[in-house]
Length: 104
Image (tube, rainbow, N blue to C red; front, side):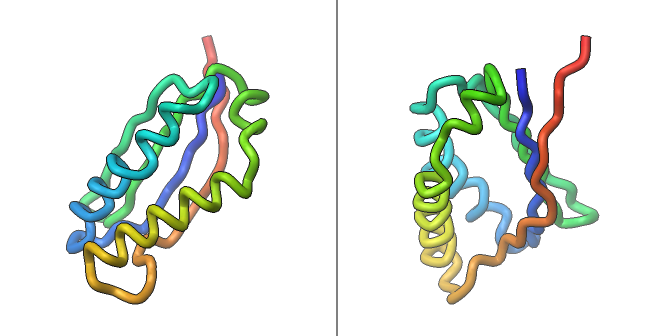
């Protein structure tokens, strides 16, 4: 099993828009992908930071998804958020992107 780890800056004012866009855009797309096992969303109120852990059956299945497809979904996500918040730019800065290997 491989775990994709993402950290985003999510300001308090934009938390609901973030959660809605995750549910409306990323969740259905991820659910359609071979090897997707589920994910967890966390939010740190003090840091105004989100942690997203995406569980994959294998690194091979996860990495076989074309980046062009991921970028297209990311654009839909950003458009959704900008519309919801009535802002010109995506307020969610990507802080960290990495992977974890399950032990034991």
